[in-house]
Length: 336
Image (cartoon, rainbow, N blue to C red; front, top):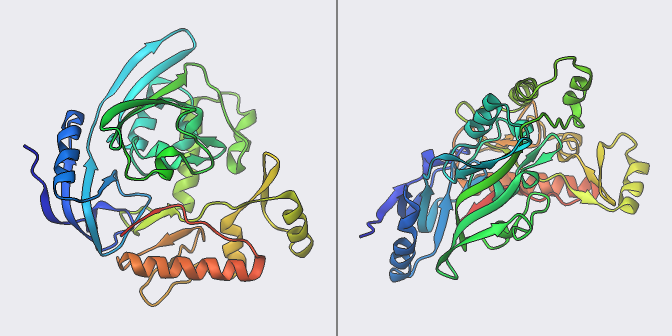
């Protein structure tokens, strides 16, 4: 028998600290509960939303759905050879804890993704990335319960349709509950040192996975606020990708515009764009604003509700578009 908790306060379950309430709530600790859980949800004619650590999420005051908190934990070695190891990791595992575990074991592939908040199950949804690495590069397959088919499915990395901060799971939100992710990691160091402060490590005589991990943590700690101290959802906007022609026009107006190659296109630094419109360190009457050390991070120190957060985000988008003609897209999901 599946029993749903009613009128659950979600305020403490997201890193933005938005005041919110769920009509129903269920903590998932056993994946085998899912078929009966989905049946129960269908009986009450409700939709389902899957919650990890709430780190990439804007909660509005009333969530009229069954919020399923993924609390599945465990790490298992599936197979290994002389060069690689394959790990099956449960969806409720905390992402940074998993990265730390890999570093301690000496496995390479996720060290650039240290200190990214969230869970393992949420990582493929957003195709999380940082410092030149995306999680798609190490995902072998994803196991999930497909609500539409009413069965467990195993999806290859290709099936997941990964792209920049996007995936099949994000495109079809509410259809899949990710129960585990299989990763293929290297037993030898495969450093990616193309971004910013990490470039200085390239000539280090004793470069190893721990050093890269520690360096990423140092950089992120300096630039990004701890959600436990200042509620936030990390980087709030995607770095916009534009055509070379569009970039050429912008560069003529703004010669110092920060940019990076992105295949046949150009990726702009969203934080730089926000800096240029004077919103870094600024906030609205609810206290929602852009972090003083990194404009890309929206902070919510007064724990205002999601509508106040979205109002500020819209203002940022409007000001950037007005100056640059570039549309910023929000990274977090929005629950209503």
